[in-house]
Length: 359
Image 1 (cartoon, rainbow, N blue to C red):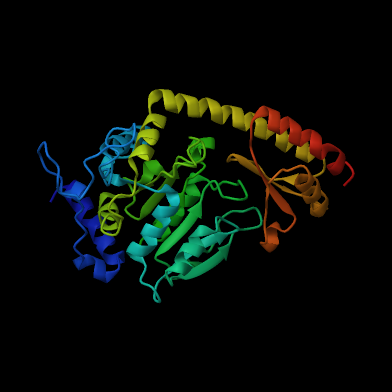
Image 2: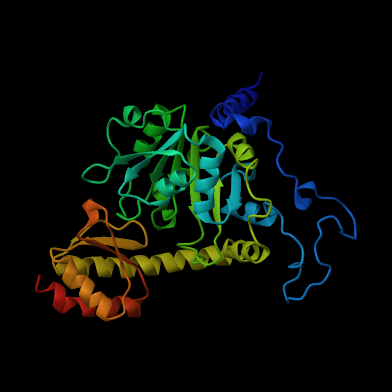
């Protein structure tokens, strides 16, 4: 048996071993587009023959996994096409992973807070347990992670982390992957375009238990379109495809996303990321100058801690500025500021100056 065949067998065994047992014999729903076909008259999907919109093909169901979109993201990410699934943002990927690999009332996930709340919420809505662990004082993974995650099927690591904006170095994440061979280590890289050197997507070929989540909502400015990606071994992807919706990506979304991933679209994204980071640096410096404790910003936001958070909240509210505060005890005196354009950044800096200067 060749090395590639051995690797394929190993990854396939992991996917089957971790999957919910009932999925192993499940016959996936065969939508009209999955079945496909050749011909000029398409009457196999109960669609309307009338196109009442300007967009060609909108009266027909879209492809489950639009080939052009998958190919475009493969070119962008450097990950093989058979190792990519696209859907309604990274949020759908979180739910798909839980539905595929966690048996309700039996299995659990692990996550490290303070972090993105949907890992825990998605698990709880499927009656899957949540092992809510804490990041260290400097927002790094705990040293004894292998013992603390217990028997969690999925281990979620947000990197860069939301809402702290902190990052975990690649070597530390790789160490976790090797320490947890019987769990899927899910690295959420929603903000990775702001610090691409921290991505672990290039490790997907090396580790069969690594899953990487991405989105076009942040740097690519398509939050309203809801388009994201799950990247993992082909065996993991095939198992997830057993539970995915028949048509997860609407045609207009697919067209918008594919265009965003063109050479021109990527250039636009890169230029806008540079501008956002520049505005974020100015805002971070200003907040520090005003006495706030500011964490290093590695996404498109900065988390600032204030001695008198009520004063800041009052000035923001009275001026129609909506920022993010938290109930988490570790973040009770913090506000997260998303980066914006130059004019809004200037306005915010000037607005907070007299308030924060007196703290």
